[in-house]
Image (cartoon, rainbow, N blue to C red; front, side, top):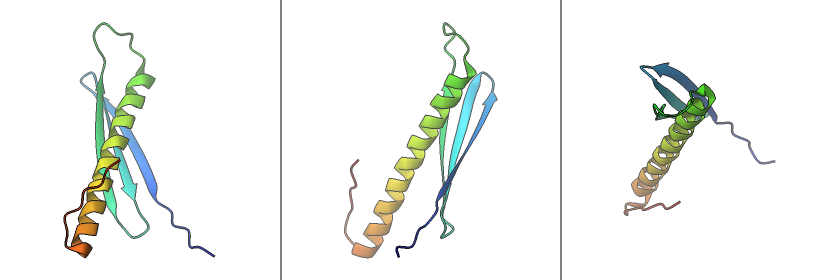
Length: 89
């Protein structure tokens, strides 16, 4: 049977000075921790719908986390292969 690993991402969302901030924290079962951040702000001409700000800030935090995870992976591969690594989406 294949071993199953569980990675957890927690997203923390808060507001301050008219901006919504989010942090996405990845925790792996081998004790790796990576965090991505995102921000959203309400345009003065837009209707205030807090859910939209939360979604946008969280999406940006997850995208940042994804980029950091790719960079971490590239660094790990480079450390093993001793060659430059360029990962693409």
